[in-house]
Length: 270
Image (cartoon, rainbow, N blue to C red; front, side, top):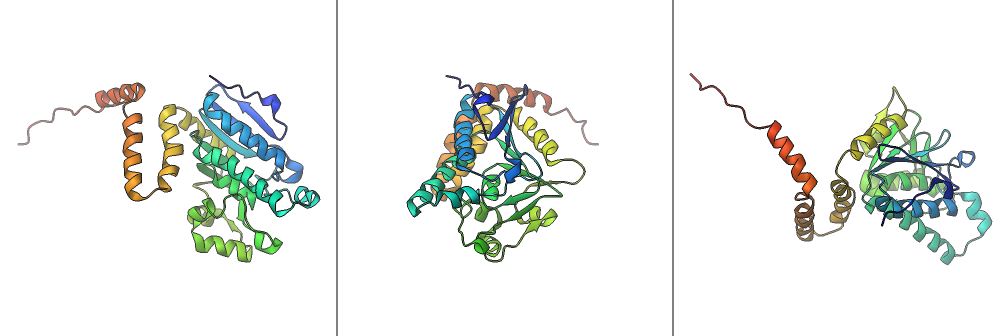
């Protein structure tokens, strides 16, 4: 049964559903550099749990104002005076949100600008494609703040940049920017002539034109397969390919492609 994702029910996210199947999800706390409070995380869980059943074909994830996301809302964290158990459950809720994103099967393209720091980098790393602009900078300043990552950086960021680079970022507060950040694996695209949002939207529109089941496999199965042994991964890949590659819509696309790419008769060589 289709699910209704009414934008009016979200307070910390600005939601726009476009006619082309792309939904734009914007963190909407610019006065806090879009720091992640409990309410924002709850709304991310809500949206990305329902997106696959709501007809969302792809998502552009952005931040309002000059920054994508500055990470954990440290003021809320300080004022809440949480116990170890309290904060453990906050972290588990972050993991729930980011797992819904990575494994949910809907392509998510992150449009990055300004700060992508701490939990903001954990959020960005849960997207499938990241686009940065000249203003974007990445950091994990937890070491200088007496903190430790709790939203999946030890999983996703370490996968993107490698263990040694992540340890360096946390111990020293090292900041990565520009092409060097792309080379490290923190983003796949850098825009210097236009906004990261424009490029992210272009990619999201391209992804939305794919078959939904194919996108679901790409944006879910690959992550699952990476968690398996190579023996189990080969089996899982075969099963997914069996389902996806024989779907009726894929047969139609393959037939059209085969017709266009049919070999032409070549003249006999003299």
